[in-house]
Amino acid sequence: MIELYAVRRVSDGLYYRPGDHYEKWVELKRAKVYPRIGPAKAAVTSWAGYGTKTNLVRLLVTEVRVIDLTEDIQKAKLTKERKLKRQEIRSKQDKIERLEKQKLELEEQLTKLQGSE
Image (tube, rainbow, N blue to C red; front, top):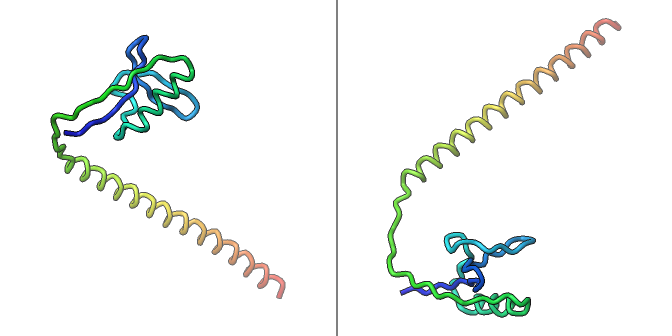
């Protein structure tokens, strides 16, 4: 059996989810789940220092299901291949435009040289 841990605020029963520059209290589904007890205890202790009463919650995993993602993987591969093809086509088009521009510049230089003779 796998044990996971979460931090719950006593006042409203919401769970802790750390953010980049903010702290959020959310439903369990979106909460930070700790695989080890130490970091979860540290979070409880930290919040106690701010005067926020929290509980350490132990979550027991009782069922494990394997999720078949073969269709999603195939779809992602096709999407990636299409994106690469589009990039390749755009790259070739850009190269053609650059070469045509260079050709025009060289033709202009040639006509100038022929005209000065």
